Image (cartoon, rainbow, N blue to C red; front, side):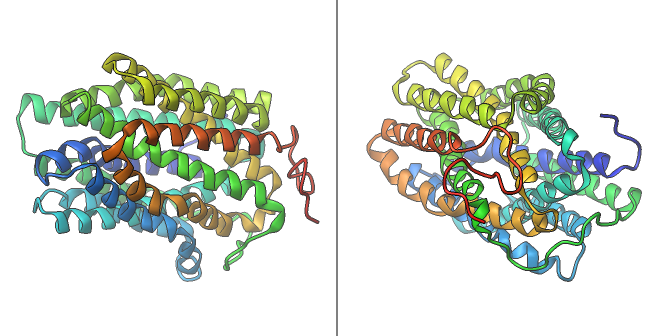
Length: 390
């Protein structure tokens, strides 16, 4: 598919870059800043991550905002919050200040991600959605490369303090958002979106897979990176290089994965993803090798691209008027487990890190069982193999 100048697809790609740069800098520095400057342990990082996910849990509230502000403008405002939250992280290296800036950043990040999903499913034709979402992942990876390289250069070459690196990352996000606000027109809605919370019985499999995805994702997002720093003593520069490798791999592969999903279907793609993730989590639990842990981390990150299939599955079964509301609801469902898993497993981590990753493997197997209930050709009225609702 071709993307023209000033098209809604190009706007999504620009906004993706803005989100990716700010969040990548914040995430890249998270574990090292938490351990070196705020003296966090596994329990405290778990508490912080649970707090960070509360705005994701409340993502359904975006539908109330959309009753007053258009989705496109709401996306701009959310990205400004993400950028400002990142900029001010590190100004005061205390527990409370870290939590406050994390919440500001998180509100912006989660609201933007919710709206981005909604706009993509509304603005892009179904036959091109998987491929376009692959391009979105590739754009996010390319932007992340710039962010990780920026972190590495500012730390290793210029020896700047955390506060200046946070300022640089958040500042880039704010600058891109202001450019988009002035450069792009306001695009009309193709379908009037329902301005209330929508929960439909026939979407139950999508909701269940979203819940499991959120639970499983926390094990990776919170504890895989923490494993690298705490157990294998990775520095900021080494974590940056690891993220760089992930991003370089995603740029060429993510669009191809999108095309693969369009060819083999969502059911087969998700089965492959969940089988692979179960094996990866077992590997995390057993490994004593930093090199093998790096291999697992890269492979784990690559499987994120296959999650495109869950979005295209919903696009195929959903009423077009439900997309904006359902994006918020599904994001909330995705984050239900995120509110308590980091805290609970943060304390489990103090006893055994292996148990945390074995739990992640079990979550992947539950997701696999659910994916087997997905039809090969999902459509409205043909959402599941078993447990259909009229």
